Image (cartoon, rainbow, N blue to C red):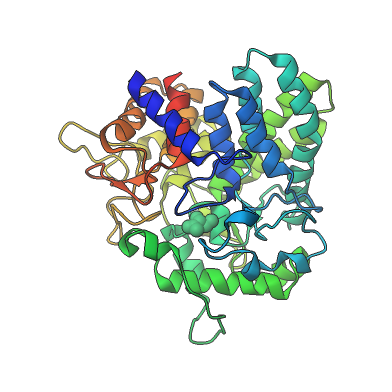
Length: 432
Ligand code: DGY
């Protein structure tokens, strides 16, 4: 395994540009929000300085209202990705930062969780404490943004307003909501994709998906990124179990960070309790034994089973009896079909569904970050055997197939881009 650790570190070195680590030099040549969180966790095992730098550069581009953008663009590397700043036009917002070019949406807030890992894994606690002192108010500002701006019922259920905010862009979970955007009725600005020229289109979202993604971005621009206005006009307002679980894990980390610094943790504790309670009450389906996303506009659960539905294990949100049902579902043929003695890691979508795909982006393949979070969740609920099994398969995939972005859920073949940073970073984290 040792030689593969060297390889993983070489992937991160290749993608490190002196200020932060791009997810992939060719496909994602800027800084991505939750990618940097996972990457920092990998660095925390062997290079504290880089782990700190990774989060510092991201939070330097935090918006004035607290939002942490999903992409921070590299000014010297424009022209290779779509959509870039000329399309987002975030300068029309009174909240966007002055010295950085960014997108106008956010991503699952893994950062407090990652920051705590940096502290726990470092031998130089003094140095990390200085960093935490710098980061803590910024983390509070980010979480406060969610609870003030994205919490319409004041119950701790935080909404996302674009599939890209979920991190699981073209998950089947979003189909029923996106279909309500009737492409024959709305005007979508012209655009040219770049991703499908770099990666085989059968592994990427469809053009119709992109049209709807772009329609939403256009709606945000027209509303100058004013949250209240967007909320009233946007057809995609959903409560995502993954986003809220990650937020919960980070709320918990925020409590611990406050404690380390001698700061007040009451606010973070309130946030933690309200989100966890509302998730258990609103997103869980007791008959199925899984958590669902929730369509805020229709006021109903979106009955599509994906790996996001198990994420409340990671956030410590699931009650004991809910956790047992989640484990049962995870071990069913839907998510764990035994293949030649091998049950590969958890795929992103129920394998028994007609539109399940082993190779298309978030419509069925195996992703390392998702499996890594599920591994943490299983450990936390003391499902030891399943946790160990998952850990083994996560380490196996990159060894056998390379540090790919995602993997075929039947055969393990690597898809998307190679030399993908979070695959390498989380592999390193598990090895240590
Ligand atoms: C992409 O471009 O596919 C990213 O996931 C969007 O953030």
